[in-house]
Length: 433
Ligand code: SF4
Image 1 (cartoon, helix red, strand yellow):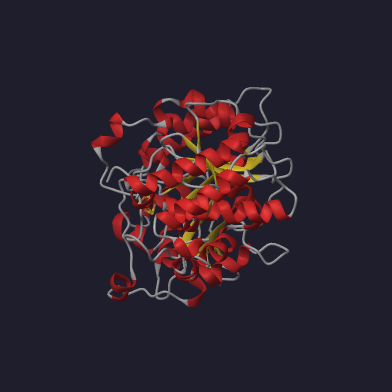
Image 2 (cartoon, rainbow, N blue to C red; image 1 turned 60 degrees about the vertical axis):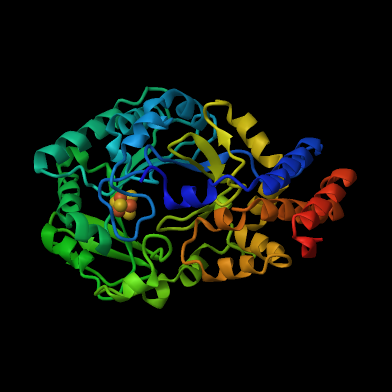
């Protein structure tokens, strides 16, 4: 599968008559004077996807295997690391993460280079999120992990003194494909004296009747504690404690309720996105992924939470229209990239308020937006779904402009706005005005 299910859904070309709506939205954005007031410009966290594919092929994954030869002909940040590193090194990061998308360690050289060269004055943490599929034998585990650690230890003397953590994805679905042994091999290796300064924890999926964490503990000769606030610990015989952090299950795309009902595991209430998502509410009761670190300990960030896809698209997590991202190939200057993103009223709105508020706004004309927001059991693709169609993008832009103009934040180009409403009406979205 060359593209993730999400990219396939949102990347489709619009019908010609609707493409006009996107062109008009672009005209409006180009005519705006620019916002004097918007969210932060630096990125506190950035996740980079070295690949959108993965050889593991878990039953709940919307990326995954089989690996496709198409990827060899596509642009990939892993095969052209300089632009993405230049962009990310200008972001002002607190935390930099190799993640997916797919499995980062299908591109081990990129991962090593990244761990060695990613930098920002306040960079405190570098993390690799992996399925540990590479840990097929003890020797392979040792070779791969030690190369990464060497790259981390060899960071330039002037570079930020960031910690290095390996986060292992291991849940019931992974275990059906590759067992718990690869994860156990990595955890065991990190108990060696000279590797104890490398952080390690496990990310799982909260399911009923799931023996995976116990199986992992058994493989390590450890003892599992109770789950509290989606977290539990495995105490190892060598004195270490490994955190297992559980998240919600995505039941959309490759996994669905029908398939799930045939499995020996079940979805507990706490694994529903609407319940799990309460962890991330800010002081105003809003969930704003663009300003949140969603790890075991939730952090509301002073900067943005960003992502760079394997194809070089730089975006804000749930924070910009899916068809208007910055691109590492066109700019290596983060200030330019973020200026481009904030030129769009939708970005300004999403970074202030989050996707649930956008759903509410859109639902006045598109009632399906409300059900999308209420029914989704995934936390980080709502914006793509809400803004997956040109009519919703233009409508959302016009509504946000109305709000921002009323607040005195921007002067909207009246003629273009009127023409936008007319185009929507002509395209059959007459109720939108
Ligand atoms: S290991 Fe992660 S990326 Fe790979 S198939 Fe499983 S969920 Fe998807």
